[in-house]
Amino acid sequence: MHEIESAIQQLDQAFPDGTALKLGALLDELEKWNRRVNLTAIRKRQEMVTAHLLDSLVVRPLLEGATILDVGTGAGFPGLPLAIVEPDRHFTLLDSNNKKIMFVQHVAGLLGLANVTAAKGRGEDYAPGQRFDTVIARALAPLPRLVEIAGHHVGENGVLVALKGRYPAEELEQSNLIS
Image 1 (cartoon, one colour):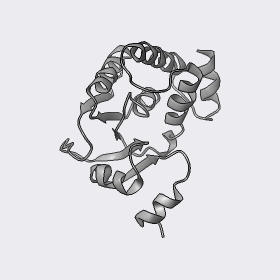
Image 2 (cartoon, helix red, strand yellow):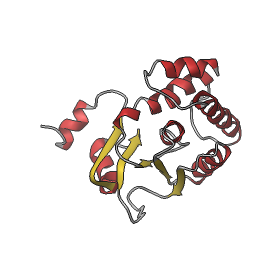
Image 3 (cartoon, one colour):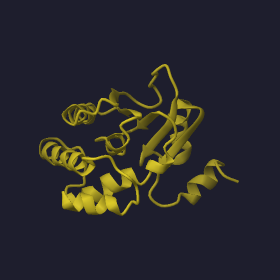
Image 4 (cartoon, helix red, strand yellow):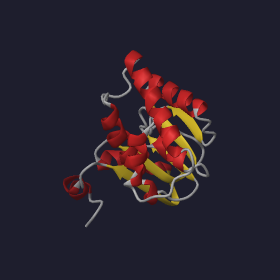
């Protein structure tokens, strides 16, 4: 738990009470489930803290509005950590992999995350009957494909946040998303 507290302090964000405890419980469950079913290739705890928790929480300042759709959430990243630290926003975590959605549902229930809805489906086919203030995706697809998959879910004044790791200059250039 100390490793999580130290890590999130690096982000220069205010967190609700009990954040480190809930994030720790999330990683505990991920480790348990990973032993039975393959949810993520990252197995070492410190790597999970960096690649799952910090990489999810760093995007927090980019969130807009009250409704967030996490397309291709996998084992719940970035959606679950963001839902833990943003209890007044509603997060829909979408993935086509049933075992990963089962994990998201399990963790949301275990941690009492009433602000999380887990949905099984593909971004292209998902039809929730609403658009979202923020649509977020992490390592889902190249930018042009990501816009095809998830762009139609972004509300009129909403934002599409693509977590790409390094700045994707070549993808942006090829997609005509910047000039």
